Structure formats: structure tokens, C-alpha cells
Image (cartoon, rainbow, N blue to C red; front, side, top):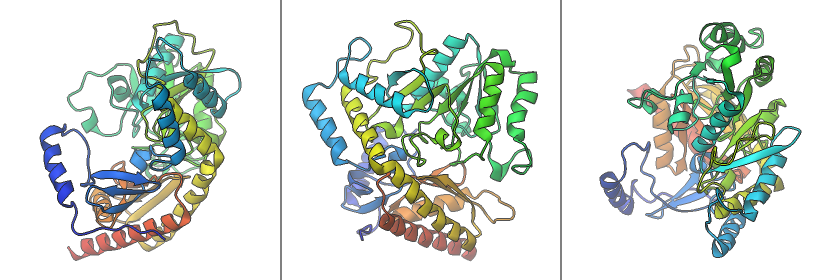
Length: 446
């Protein structure tokens, strides 16, 4: 059984030197939580510049879906890079684009013909989806959700409602966006209980937003994360997405599923909407699609994607090297990694639920597949968020060789590569339990 190996205090001497250089040269806008200076990776393991070995339960923010440097992905990248790196898919044709597009059309839910637009990131996918929705509907407004993160470009940022710092001093943003509460049952803003609530959060959209500020016949799309990512790995209750779909159909509104983080096998299905048998009109994809290579896409019904040449394009979108990586990734996902995600997710959830019964500070445990969150609170009665404890847990875990990351104000996210095995889950969760124990003791002692 492999285990992390930490040699002395972190950061080590080489990492410390690079950190000093980084502070002089790199934008301070990046959100680094701890001094991880990573040099190499393999599977679920990464090594820093000083030779320290870490177990990675973050996967490059849910990007390295097939693990670090999967041999099949590396081989696909190398083979393609030797033949052609770039010509621009905007003006020329690539075999890899067509092959990847067919795969994406095949794996996204929905009957009938679909088309694909390629780009470079999740934010660009959201931008493309929003532009397409406005273009085809001729409607000006969007409805998005509190807690949502859709990217940092101006349009995607306008749809985002995750943290105020992300919008501070960037206004005015793109107009016509209205936000509404997500189905966050652990912290329901309507003080209702599921299922007796009868989805008050969906009824609020029609009974309040559409009657006051967002006329239904002028709403182009509702943009939703099937499982909220940066908002706290919030999983909606059964029936929620279906009710959103019904609302959209009633008023001729498009439903855009932002599957940038929840898609590509992360949830134990190819796309998270499949857990609830819901079909969107447009899907936004990125992150895990390329196993670390920068690639994004939207997949939309052919009846929607009929914009004229020049309407929207991307110089690097569908780059042949990135497309080759994505093709290899999808084949690996279909070859067993999605099933592994579902199985290992159950292992995570069972262990966390046992810990929840043991520790008052673990208020809620939620997830699908390898998209799992543990919300850290002061106690289970008040449910007062405890970002201080959450941050202390993440930093302590790093010191012990486990890479974690937060999401939302006070949630620890578990998003390892989809290749993770039961032994690696056990090692990581043992470290996590050790860190929670230490942080709780320290808090009690203070």
C-alpha cells in the first residue's frame, strides 16, 4: 500500500526558493491555499520539487480525470504532437475534431441530432452557451443560481454568484442576469423540508422572479449546475432538475446544464444530469474532458446551433493535440473509469458518514461518484459555518501528505482522479480523519 512521504517541514528548500520567485513574478490574484510546488505526477500521486510525495484528492480541480499522466493519454498527445500541433479549427478542418465531436454527441443525453462547438475552458463554454441561447431565442434575460460558479470572463462572471471577491470592482457586468436560490436543502433559504416543500425554490422562480423582474417570455435560458461545484458540492434532491425542465418547457426557455465540473464521469455517470434522467438543451463541458489539456465544448441540439459562419469562433478551440487527449480520455471513461467513480464514491460516502457520527464539526456529507463534499460547521445543531476549521483541516492534511481543496464557504471537497482505488481511498481518509481529530483538539484547547 502506497503512502505519502514528507521529508521535513513544508515547504522544502527548493519549493521555498520558487515561492519567493513566484511572489515577484506571478499575479497575486491566484488563490493558492498552501505551498504545493508540484513537479511530477502519476495516477493519484504527485511529487513536489523537493521529492515529497502526496496523495492527490483534488486532481487539478477535478481536471485530471484519468489520473496524472495516464499512459494512454500521454501516448495520444505525443503521437499527435509529432504530426500536427495547430492550424486553427476556426478556418481549417481536423480529423480529431470530427472524431471527438461524434463521441460527445453520442455520450450526451438527448435524442435527435446535435452539434458541437469547441473552445478552451469552462468559462469559454459558458460564454458560448449564453451567446447561442440569446442568438437563437432572441430573448435578453438569463436566470442563474446563488452559489453558482460559471467562470471569470465577463459574461460567465455575470452568471456566477459564488463569492463577492470574484466580482469586486469589475462592474458593471453583462446585464439581464437574475439569480435565485439553488436547491441547497441543508441550508434552505425558505426554511422548508424536502419533499413536503414541493420545490419552493423552483416555484419562487415563476411566482416571484418572472412576475417582477424577469418576464418569462423574455428569458432566454436557465443556466444550472446539476451538482453545484464551487458553491459547496451541493447535490439537489431528486425531482429538482425535472421541475426546472418542466418550467423551461412551459415558457419556451432553454435549459443549459453547466457540466464543466460535474461531467465527464466525475459523478459516476458521464454527465450528472443522467442521475435524474433529465435532458438539457445545451451542455457545457471542459475540465475532465482532456485529462489536463485545455479544452472545452458545448453540445447543443442541431435545431439550436444554426448560427452563421463568423457568428462565434475560437482560434485554439478543438486544437488537435487537445482533441487527441480528449478522445483518449473518453475511451478510458467508457472503459471502466465511470463505473470506478461510482464504486469509489460509495466508499468515500460510507467513511465520511461514519466520521459525521463521530465529529460534531462535520455537518453534512453529500455527493455523487467522486464529487463528494463534507461541510464543516461549529456544531450539528446550530450548523454555523466554520471556514476556519475547514481551512485548518485542509492545511493540516497537506502537511501530512494529502492534497485537498475547499469549495463554498466551509466545505471540503473530495475530487480525486477517477482511477483512485480502495486502498488509496483508505489511506487518504485515514489522513483526513487524523487531521479532523487534530483540528478539533486544537479548537477545544484554545
